[in-house]
Length: 299
Image (cartoon, rainbow, N blue to C red; front, side, top):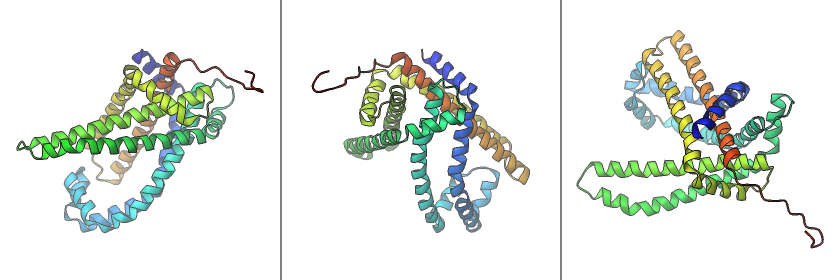
């Protein structure tokens, strides 16, 4: 079933390329406010960092680390980054509504009409569900960090040097799995609210947590398929950057074009993931609750 739903999701994304283009255009709009301050910071910082010339040939963690530590103008990027992150959270509620509306509706109206209709119709309930997801992840992460602290201390006191790194890796892995679990539940909560036209964001989110927990093979399986494809796409992109270093204007423009093509493909895979999750929900979702109408105490 995982492979069948994943294949259906990929086909749905292939048949609706406009969705990937819209998500790509949104990512470009988000990046534009950061482009000029980031370029200014990078240009000024590289002029003051002796090892910055290494970045002309290939990415260097050492040179970038020195740049981050020594350039005080980096602080100017923090407000812009936080503002962009806030806009991204709000925009996710809009794009998510439009995306699910296009993938689930069979309306004969135009693609853009359905997208913006869904963006407006589901905006507030999707935004509330996103806030609940962030709050739950923050609370769960704090509880886990406190509970894991004795383990971290025990590993730090061990004579075996790799123990601390193994503890750090285990902690990051568990936090990543927790973030993935909450994210998948958020996706299925949006799908449920859209399919049932429900406004109960909190109840939909917590019921989706249970849905994901009861069906880990299906829910995590379709995500894993898309994750593997995404990793393959970025591996090709990194291989290109290694083979064709951006050392001239021609190669810089070529690298920029390949980078945007990679982001576009990534947006298409995001569409495929949502379509795959819709297929999973359609096959495995519990029956909706019957509508109860009260009238003077008579049901």
